Structures are given as C-alpha cells and as structure tokens.
Image 1 (spheres, helix red, strand yellow):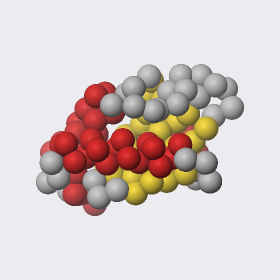
Image 2: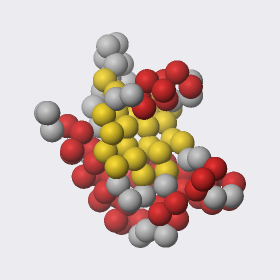
Image 3: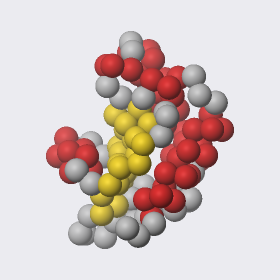
Image 4: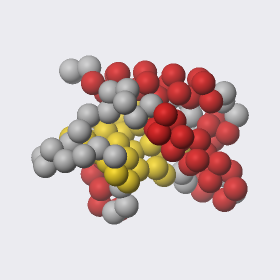
Length: 109
C-alpha cells in the first residue's frame, strides 16, 4: 500500500465514487495501470486547529492500517476526507463505518 502525495491524484479521486459517513468521506477511483493500492488522507481547516486536524488524520491512518485487508482493491486510489465528528466518535464505530463504506464501493451500480 502506498500513499497519495500529488494534488492531481487527490483531484482525480474527488471526481470518482464517494461514500459519506459521519466521521469521513471515502472516495475511490479505479486507475488504468493496475498497480498497488494507494491511499490519501485530507482534513481541511474547517475541522479545527492543527492539533485537531492531526488527531483526525492519525485516527484515519490507523483505521486504514488495521483494515487494510478488508476489501481494498489493487489498482485503485482511495482518499479519506476527515470530518469534525471523527474527533468524538468511538474508534470501533469509525472502523465499522470504514468497512461498510468499502463494501458499498464494491457493489456494482
């Protein structure tokens, strides 16, 4: 699993499929290269101070790290956009929301 770093990759994922939850929005985009899974994290200043934004980002990173084998597909880019609710929601609930969001993305439309 690799990290997304380029702004163009984040913008491309923003135009793809989205699944909103209370704590975050999961965006996913299928790439044409079939390479490894790439994951990016973003938390805007609307969420709060730098300390709060970093806490949200750390929680999201840990959820992905613990749930990496739960259905993320190779050749896809995933972006988690943190929300303010991620500061107060229980970690177990956020983990379940992530698993549910990944399942919703995999359902053919």
